[in-house]
Image 1 (tube, rainbow, N blue to C red):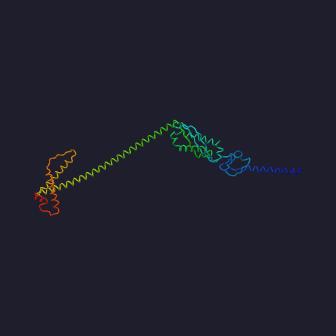
Image 2 (image 1 turned 135 degrees about the vertical axis):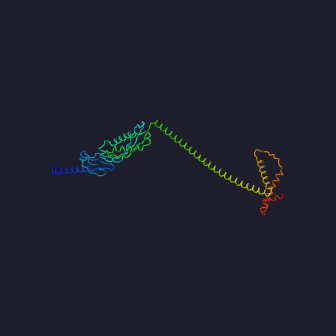
Image 3 (image 1 turned 120 degrees about the horizontal axis):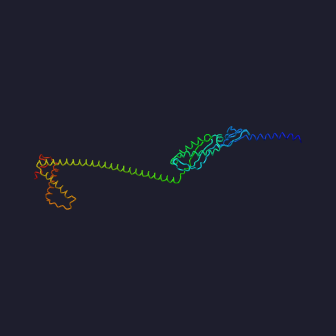
Length: 328
């Protein structure tokens, strides 16, 4: 019995050592998931950082400081009141996106990384937006976001953090200020509408004046052309009259009296036509001898016969008006 007890003690001790060794080995094996990193401390001092994958550490000598999330995270910036450069009170809130690039710095350089980043962002929002006018706050959000991103990213760089984006979500002016802005916007739009309307009237007047100018030019061109045509017609008429007068003069020189009768009858008929077509006379009473008018017309007929009848015959030496003189 004592023999078996003596053999059981070493076996039990060896078994305990094996179990303890296996436990120590399992304690030294660490698996780091994707998106996380673990800083390792040896006797309280930072030694290295475990990246995603399988790692071995020295149990009871090395210690994991804590899991550091390496993925991009988002923080909601609570609403806060800000006094602008022109003393307007507005409420502003936003959102911050950041990512840890150095797990050791984020673990040892700052305490409570998220809270520190949030407070730093809120402080810089008040600083940046407080140096701008209200109109700039409402119209230059991209510039505000850029300036905030630059300032906060530089401040968090020693913590191993990268600020990827800062966005201002809402800017809420007071109600009375909103009403004033609405009235100002309405007045500005009315002003632009009046300017556009006046510009339209001005353009219309310019086009109308241009049209009248072109119309006057065309009308003057027409009058000039008409005057030219009238002058040409009068010139032709004068030439015909001069030619007829010449022919009459030649006929008179040759002893023909019917040419003179022709001109007298023509003027007689024209005068009678003018009197008959006058608009200011309704009844015309003219003492005249019908036989004289008929005789004048007969004289015209004789002259026509002599002119057109002798055009097909050879001309005589005494001229076309001698036949009428012989008939007399």
